Length: 188
Ligand code: FE
Image (cartoon, rainbow, N blue to C red; front, side, top):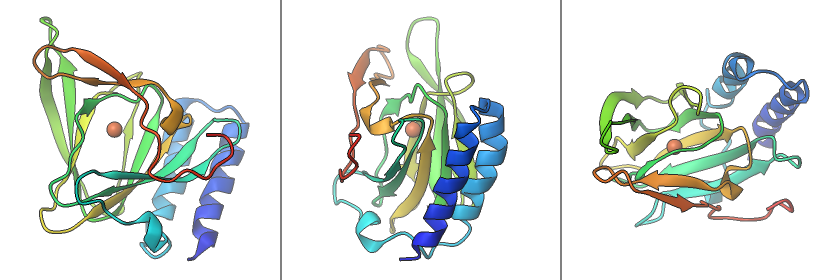
């Protein structure tokens, strides 16, 4: 493993959050750091890039000791997708391998959720989510014959945060804590 690339990213983001910067700065300077991390797909260890036959996997790569951010590899098998869900903290999603399809959802007056803007994320691209603008979406592997992998960075320890999935028709909200497929950090 070329640990240097991930470590360089973690150092850069740590220095940035140390300055208690705004979300806008995270989404410009932090986004640039993430873009350079995912520019080449040659550093993620094999054991943190394995798909599961049934469920998309969330492998923790790094959790900031002060819970200011976390870095996770999301590994999607063919056809796998999330339910409609939120995050409650800022997030950046860098496509490392394959392609993902993201659909934003909007709450209607009757409480149901309507599918809105769709985008396909190609390798090398970075997308964002934020409770201030667009926090509710569905993400799916856009490839039917291969796994796809994205590197997610969140403004908190995402595996410990209580957030929600939403029923599309009734709008019913179910709270969940995602956890991680692997757990090794002391602050979990
Ligand atoms: Fe998400």
